[in-house]
Length: 382
Image (cartoon, rainbow, N blue to C red; front, side, top):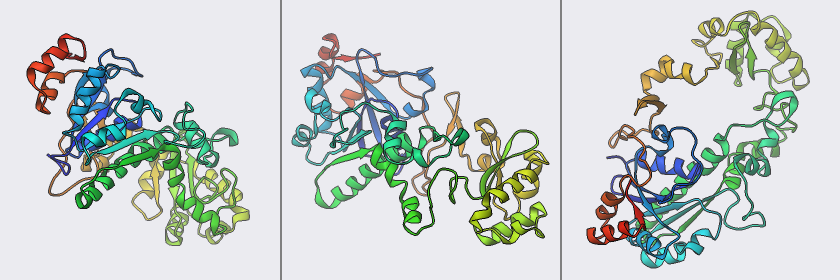
């Protein structure tokens, strides 16, 4: 059950943002069938039985390099609401299940495409990963890293925020539009587009003269003394985000700095480096947890910088169940939350082809046909 109960999704297996999109749709209750290769392959890191991105859906293994395998996929498409794939532009067409062919079988299908560069443009066929797409989109150039070099925002901003989540938004938008038009459409979700889209506020600040540029010198990139991570006496850090004047005043009070210039000079940009050094000096006098105990209950907008293991034990995270445990793995719980149609608890990831016979017959294929396809190696039952 869930908000997407009754929605049938085909996920042609891939890596990174595609599986993330499949996970989110499955978390919200969609019946997501992952189509894996009969021969395995692809990038696999660690123990697949603990792959959180693969939770919550069944797997059927098809040979999509064979005409018979593609025909099986198209028969599934006829019963589906959504198909998502993450090949380079043109690959699905060459294999025989591009959007045009799929829409002939099912005019109401939402065909979701996940790539780094998008379906067109001079770099559409280039190889790349999250970091290269974000570099071109102008994101990495504004993230402060060690010794002033560009930073690496893990693969959260690209693969997941600007990639998989953007694909989910596009798919859901197309499903809403279909409810009035009766027609499906193709969703072109590209990480380079999504990375740029998430820079909207920075473009706004730049346009208003409030983002002078350079890394680590601006309001939200570590340039402002009141929006920074500070090292404490034990080598751990606190995060300070006291932007509004009332929060800044609470920070000054909590640090005992009310009588110094820093207390009245919040927006004196020329003195920001000086004020940052002053705050660094103060925070270095006590441990992270000592500062957190004093400042987190106030309006100073200060929080201890936690690592994953610590975050899972934080009282707020624990109270909300933000981090849960399923199939022996700590992991994020489904989000967002719905009051009438809550998402179910995560279920274990399937091994490739684990549900081939069950899923294909459940989606309407004749059992005798499925058995013949299995004997011919077109489909594989794990």
